[in-house]
Image (cartoon, rainbow, N blue to C red; front, side):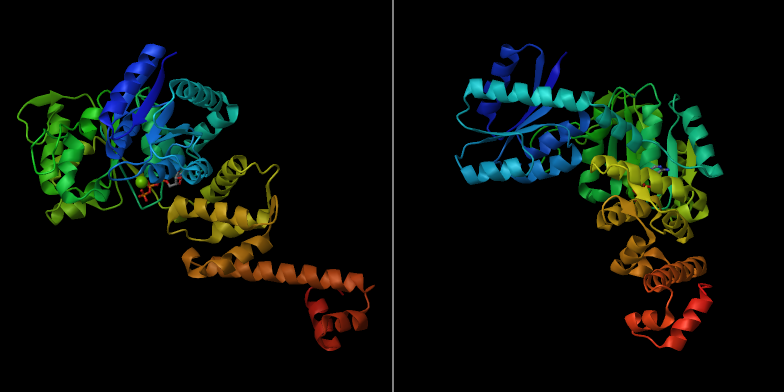
Length: 452
Ligand SMILES: Nc1ncnc2c1ncn2[C@@H]1O[C@H](COP(=O)(O)OP(=O)(O)OP(=O)(O)O)[C@@H](O)[C@H]1O
Ligand SMILES: [Mg+2]
């Protein structure tokens, strides 16, 4: 089967030579080249590579910081570093940061082939591994038992196979992106990668060129032709996040792209036909933005072929235990923790909180809780430590949680008195001495907790 290799290096001669050599060496290897880290990142967004050859010294972002980024974003793609410098310190640094190998220039071709073969077989092992598949599919699973989540799942199955544009609304962290991914995965476009663009993360001046691409010379800095996101997403799905932050001028162009299924690259009058499914998301109220003249009403109706609104987690608290278990299982698998158990009271307590950062906040909380807990058991004491550790106001204590908290502390105190009292053969005098408290106080406590 064809294997896809990406070579990122700012030395054009090197790129051409390597591509020619590798494709001749093995016709099943398809080699893409990128002469800058920026172009490399763009290609990674739109292609599924099996391995990457990455130069260390490049203009702009250097290879080592790119390596660090890739290890987080695409951790299962093996990366081989290539460098003109012979430095054992850099080599060790790269390996420690997760590179599979480090090859010096001029590249010895046998050495390169051996290294690539190793990388490709590692990639295959990773892809075939049940754990990897399980984790990937588990990460995409939409979890919840609430009526709203059940209804959303039904909606997703119903609209996924169509090409209807979908607008996903909801507060930050409610699961808009995971819903977009689910729609794509269940659609006929699923074999092509879904492209995601966060409209608010791109400077105003660059958004048009990112979305629609540009022609060489269209503006200062446009040194070569560039394919934009929409064109790259041809035959696939594009997910435009934070659509409410898109400027009006770009909105007009986007409307035309959706209506006419065609785009114009910046600086070009030649239309390009595209077949793209649009999914958009926002945590803003688009109707308010329309009233304020910041969002086009016609675009709103166009993107809202169908709207999926994700309610905040505090309005579907019945989902909290299942989500907690889901995130705990995922974390345990990734970190090789076997037989993780979480005390029932932890689930109950988490369910009392409001989670204004929604599912994302709960996920991070659960992951931190497990990592701070002792071994494979998470109990109420770990939870208390965690709440102490964090600024409690982050977790929006409400009346319900305060009562629960008090109840928990009582239970812990009761356990404590009971164990010391039993250890001292139910002798009040000895127990009071060990605890360094007054006998009458101890007596009161034991009565209060119905120990005596
Ligand atoms: N119902 C769910 N089941 C399982 N995981 C979920 C669910 N909802 C959200 N998540 C997880 O919670 C995290 C936050 O979700 P996501 O990124 O989809 O939220 P978002 O609405 O796009 O947030 P933002 O507005 O901040 O971009 C992700 O890791 C996602 O996988
Ligand atoms: Mg999001």
